[in-house]
Image 1 (cartoon, rainbow, N blue to C red):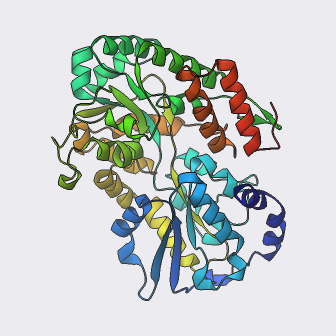
Image 2: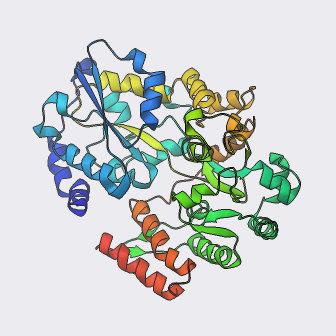
Image 3: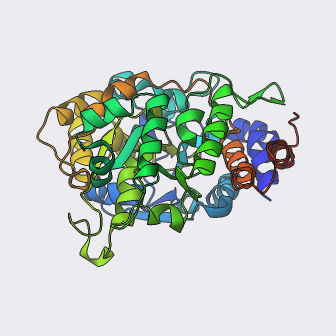
Length: 442
């Protein structure tokens, strides 16, 4: 079903849906719906909506979050089926807003299922001017039409354990740690020092993958041929070396073993990630007692800091899309304006939720403020992100990114573990990718 639905979204039905797409009436028109259906995969957006927008929802409008986990592609499968059946549903049953991630955003951008943010929804260039350019580039279709907006930008860096940095480098100061990790040769040297002290530089195989994959100069697919960028080859070489030398803990990303290294008695020096990873993924996994919440001293919470690391990169992001067929256009517009364009709201989200938000003046204000992140031992890490966010280039993104990422990480885990040769790992990768995307070849 996954392949069939994806193919439909990418092909034949687009023509028929495009001809049936409703025209926007004067004055904002097919509005006034009593149910706002929002498709999500977790409660990240739900929490921000509830805290920063819920009070603005018009009386008589019910907000219905349709939450489906990402695992096993379940969210995309359910969303695809819902979008394909929009025309046959009543107005109150249709999806009004849905969220997408960077890895598969392009699957939805070049389809009529996503509304034009400017023409259909009504946001102006003035409204959007302070957003980081790359966040709009990702959601701009082949005709130059913007199809989604985000409240966050996702420049990333190295989140390290202060106590381990002191043990290995003699300091936990972010500027001094950055100087010690400012390129890959230095990073490798510190990994050796960490090993000698009984620590792992990284938790496992996939930790550094996004640093390299975000710096590629070639798309995964050119024509219908699979291309392997030198940055991907560099990740494989480094990860094999780190595994063989005991510089990592042989854990897979998102596994219990990976996050176990961040516990109070954990031995992992650091993790690569953006603000959402720090706040939404890493911090909760450092707690000894989740019931006590985010309190310094609860596990390793507070014993962390942030620096840019050896190579700038970005990772992920979540975009808000208006769905074709919605009868809540005015409400969608107001949600987008409030949660992605309002500077004051962007400042609040950054200070209260830890996001690096998608508004450059807001982030410069926070970076110069007395904001302190308790998880990071009181560090104001926002300034580290700003220049990185302004320079992010997503020109090598493609609709194949998610599948390629999952398949190469899976295929090479066996190589890193010594179960197969490098040649066999490549063969396994190509076989699995071509099974997923039959139109491709080596």
